[in-house]
Image (cartoon, rainbow, N blue to C red):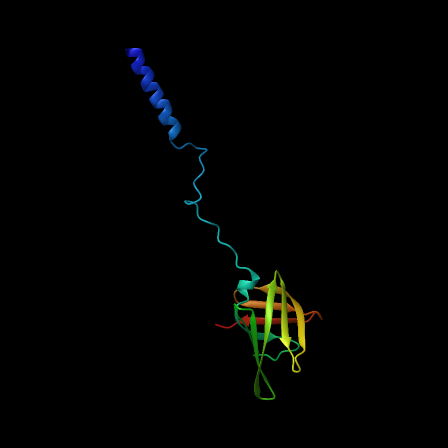
Length: 137
């Protein structure tokens, strides 16, 4: 009887030891914190940017990028407020804009995003000219 009791106790201890956590057990995915995902250029570009340095655009001009792929440019020319709208898309570090010109003709242009942070942006056009912007609050 004594041997039977020790056998049952031994099996119980071994069985319970197998159920407990071990040093090789990995935490379940629900308890681990996901690594913060870095925002894509498509996400970072959203908002209104002011030109700080450009060959073609006057200082103070603004460009607004919206979630729905629209781009609105505001600037002063000959003392008058001017604006134009276009469509844009971002693919990696390339930004493509499409604008309808008077007469219905559409013009497409692609530039390279050289720098894009939460507060600064630099875009190089196909001629190699660099335009610099700062994010408006």
